[in-house]
Image (cartoon, rainbow, N blue to C red; front, side, top):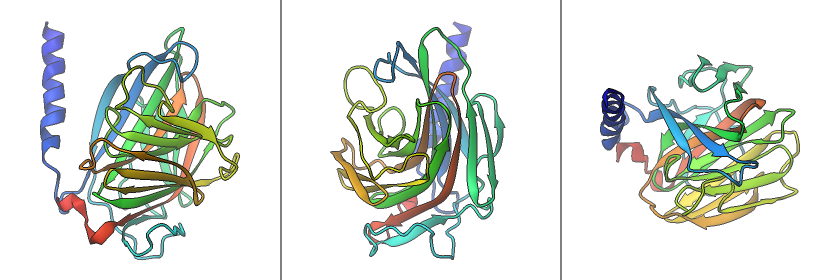
Length: 274
């Protein structure tokens, strides 16, 4: 009973501050979320995911004055509100060792590098998902250039939009030309690519790729290297969260490298201000 009381208190402390969207002077909340989804054999056979939350706070992201290295053609008329080249860490991306998340993160050589080593925990395969929210907006284009390096097949990286791990939409790719669209709102078991999955020659094997999401109202379209992969409709277009997300199966070791991030907003609407 005492443990349950402590857990309820911690949940309330995490939820209640999130009711008010911070203004530009405070900056968006940056949240690391690790999801443990028990899995019988493959990513498509999971039971209900379990989750631990590690909230973090950062200052307002600093918009770079230089031209973004990502040459994104989607909605060039919209205003660029965030441009990150990782030439430094002025935006205070989480770095260092995180034992709970099983990561070591650094910003160096113009990249944000995350070394992820997942331990074995059960006789079943377990998916670990790490989502980092870095911006909030109503309608937008977000592009992330990244790469993963691993000898294991069961790991991906991508974008999480219109919500968090409990109710958002994740689009991710692996290093062998496959893509996955995950909808946390679908009934039944939660697994990577439960909404749609496939492969496409536009996805480069063992090389950097650029993932783009165009999110406007309830419509979402996801691209890789300028080629449309899948379109989908969301349940709640009022959700504003934008996160980068990493997926890795239990026991894998993988290094993720991010070069650039670009966010453009429709009608100059920086919705961090509401």
